[in-house]
Length: 296
Ligand SMILES: NC(=O)c1ccc[n+]([C@@H]2O[C@H](COP(=O)([O-])OP(=O)(O)OC[C@H]3O[C@@H](n4cnc5c(N)ncnc54)[C@H](OP(=O)(O)O)[C@@H]3O)[C@@H](O)[C@H]2O)c1
Image (cartoon, rainbow, N blue to C red; front, side):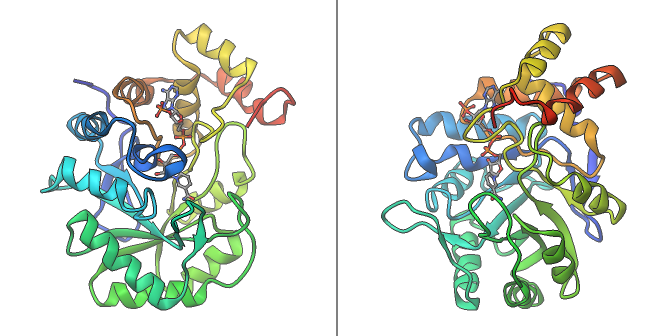
């Protein structure tokens, strides 16, 4: 079993929830296109059990993965949940029969979504719920989210949600949300090649709020860069490990949730938390976002 430190621990602000910085994102456990059952159900269960056995105590999910599929696999693999396991879910979309991603944002949608997550995960309360702003595809776009955050705050007051975060959110939306309820984390698209949120990462760090990048490895289009490959070769590790180590190095408020459907990739990703990057290597990697030969 892995002996990695998983990047050290982090406590979400104003909470008693402490997690290792290297976590796990469950989206890859659903079928192709994040729709339907996984191609290898037993491997999906094994990935989750091995992650937790290795010390992962931060799992990201949503009831709209599948839909319901990843939550049901998490429950099958891990329920009753070990003490200290933090499961973070998200609301704001639904998946109709045609597999498309549709907004699901009315107060009743969000209330129903919380109950769906509770039922499928087998929980009485959800540790953290992110309101996922639909925005424009994988990118954020401006617009008030006060109604949705107020609804989640009401569900928190009822005891069904412990803490609230936002996802795919702009700076203005985060500021707006914070006027309604404490925001403990922001989950946005960010990685070595996509650094649009650089200033936001630093701003949240100053406020002690977690930044949890989605697509840390490039998501549906894995990161490819000659610089990344040559750095990895020099260090004797894989490009994906360097990409994850760079994120851990980038800022102490960054928590990782790389997604994988395979135990081999899981082990590789967890081991990345052991990698130390010297200043020269970080400078080289920092150049990637500016170069044209990166595909992302
Ligand atoms: N808030 C949002 O809007 C949002 C959006 C997307 C994702 N998320 C969350 O963020 C998590 C991470 O994002 P993601 O899973 O989409 O993307 P990701 O972690 O950037 O990349 C996952 C992809 O990389 C592959 N992979 C993983 N480890 C690898 C390795 N060591 N070597 C080579 N390939 C590897 C996976 O394939 P294999 O399965 O073959 O390993 C999968 O195709 C998700 O699981 C989900 O929980 C949130």
